[in-house]
Image 1: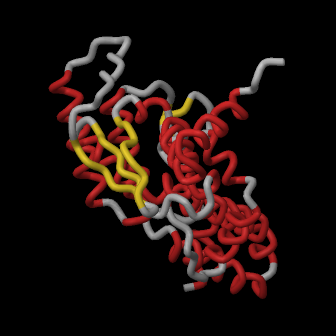
Image 2: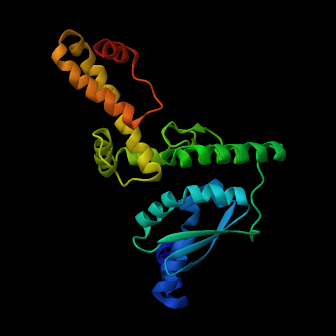
Image 3: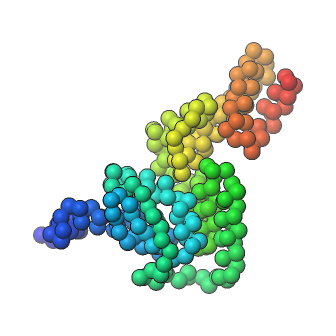
Length: 253
């Protein structure tokens, strides 16, 4: 009976140097899955020492992008190998493998300008949005196919992207979204924070939409509507309230 790959690899690594070498080998082998196919073409894992994974990247722009995504990468590793990868360090240098050439020729000077400009914008963006903006830079640099995910900004043929779809179903993220909606702090970061904010935004808008017609008829409900509006403004200061809600509340001021 033929051996299965998942049985052969651990056995071979055990013979080559024990459980620690097995662990390191699996962590390095998982890099492509953790970082994604496109970024895997521009990077390669070198070593895992005392919980720090060292990854070589092809250029400073890619290193900048991966640094923004570091916390998300650490979470993905934690899901696969709990407690093994505690930090990721990126070094710039020539890869042993040649990155795959893009299928469609692009103007390299135009791509470089666009990526640098997007990274400049990322640095000026609020902390919780920097990763989203940086992903847009990567999309410009690599010409990924698919429109940006409306939640995290990662190019994807389907929306939301697979990562955000998974996080949308996470009870943990949904619980943190409720905390955000009620004005409580959260320890979420990266994609999980973006998804929680998305859920909180949807919930606040939905509650305001449902309460508005009742508050229009019953003045005693307007303080509740005002509270929802205030929480929305606090959480999303750059957005405007729905026109009907804003109009009603302005009459109360």
